[in-house]
Length: 259
Image (cartoon, rainbow, N blue to C red; front, side):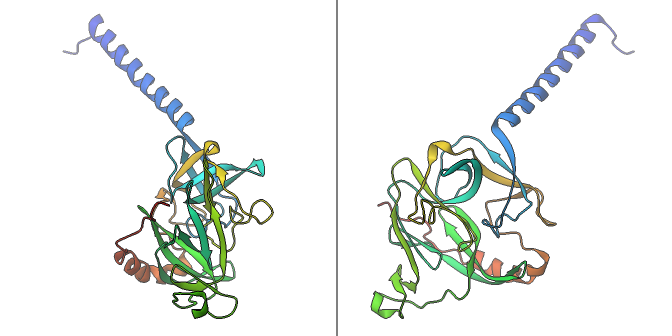
């Protein structure tokens, strides 16, 4: 026979309040700790594509390799999403868009040709610390190996054992992070700020760490983590085996030395 006693009704009401309280608390925590942003441009291709909706968690330390949301230092009303490539004290150079951090060339593996909206790029997997992600580079990037500048052709320099067009050097000031786009030569980032002189962004202004693609700009990107190999569009599905091969050949050392 069902227990309809006042004590049972009181217990049921108590549990209902507990569950309601937990739901309200979860909603408040999500509103406070997680925010949703829409990706406005192709600066973070292939990791993020225009039209993606991403979640960003607030708080936490900033590390190399993180994708962050922050107000553009030169126009705080505009929000940017970029990848952290340099921390305070780091010396940075770029050879054809490939980062050299404290003399350490961040390892990459070429995947293949990547077409996007009528443009052709070269897709690479790049490793930085615990992060593995895709980057796009323009045109041929194999300038050859070298030990000194004279080993390279005219208009090229030798950095990190490779020849190419060099950007930098920059030394990241205290309290700042140096940020770039994964679409290396098509991103307005730390390399070009301050009228082309370059600058970092204040770490204290970081609004969130981008964690997940909630809704994708094309199919297959919903509920996908940001940290990891890029999700290939249908037209680039043939690159899947080459990307898997690159991931299996992860180098032993991916963390730059301290300066």
